[in-house]
Image: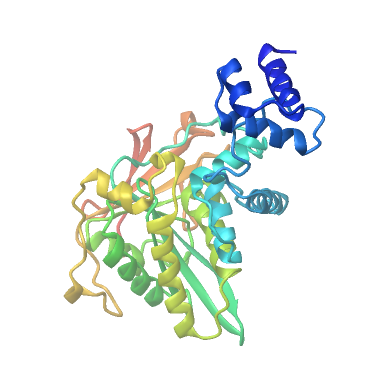
Amino acid sequence: MKDEEKQRILAVIRFLAGEKPESICFSLGRSRPWLYKWVRRHSDHDDVWFRSSSKRPANTANRTPTEIEEIVKLVRLNLYNQDLFCGAQAIQWELEDLGVLPLPSLRTINRILKRNDLTHRRTGKYEPKGTPYPKLPALLPNQTHQMDLVGPCYLSGPIRFYGLNAIDTATARCGLHSSSSKSGEDVLEGTWDIWSRLGIPDNLQVDNAMSFLGSPRYPRALSQFVRLCLQHDVEPWFVPMAEPWRNGSIEQFNDHYQQKFLRKVIMTSTDELAAGTMTFEQRHNSSYRYSKLGGKTPIKALSASKATLRFPNPDDSPQQRLEKPETGRYHLVRLIRSDLKLSILGELFSVPPELKLEYVVATIDVKEQRLKLYLDKTQVEEFDYKIR
């Protein structure tokens, strides 16, 4: 037993024996509040009343309530088991949708996940392997956009629609547009609408849907989408056939769009769809934080870059039928298989043997009417390509 504890016991015994408090305190060099404190503790019938208790408050002012922590853990487990995004940002959005208050910050959610060993990833970090694949620049805002058509999707009613989604690969800003079809006219309108908010990119990467590339019936005719791009100095890039993962940024965003918008928001009319689409776009760009951006939101990343964006002239909105441009280039990335054939909308071109099982870039120069083949930025072949 410590000397301090022995002194407390002795002081209480003397007090209970009838000795005056002044005498006890004087002899021990203690104050009367000290004496009364231990007398009171003794009267609580605690067997270890003479021991010091922790001075730590029972409730910490900035400690997350236990029930909030449990909800965070349950939401994370639920998202993980559904094979959905389950990071701090996804959890916070889920809590917000559930009406949980107080809504914990991203930092608090990350602390809860770390404290409960819930930070493991579903899979390891992706490591590229196999045949090298050409990459587009993504260092500055609007160097490269990725775009995709989602649908058909359905509202209550039922109302069918298509979502045209785009994302800036440097800042992760998204642009959304919904339409009743995936016709060339609707794609033009949607692209123009998205550019009016995101700005015009230098490169625009898409898949090989006819709405973008055109029809195999007219392999050398420029689609309306390609014409719009070339008229505004945008270079379209078409990913390899049947390889949607090459458009990885927009494919990942599409999952987010499905989980947090289409499956969450109840919409029964085209007006509600249009309003909800804009609300989701603004929410994503102003609130969603990306680790690749150092925890910044897309808008904050754009602001930090201090980049000057290029926007379309509202008076030049695309008409039903665009004129064929005289200049510009568009690109198709293709894997050359063992038959040594390059296929562009069904038209075949023979290529050198050294290109077997390599990804090449087929660049069509509108002004020169030439098809140029590149491997690792080195031109390896060239063909006449008269555009109709």
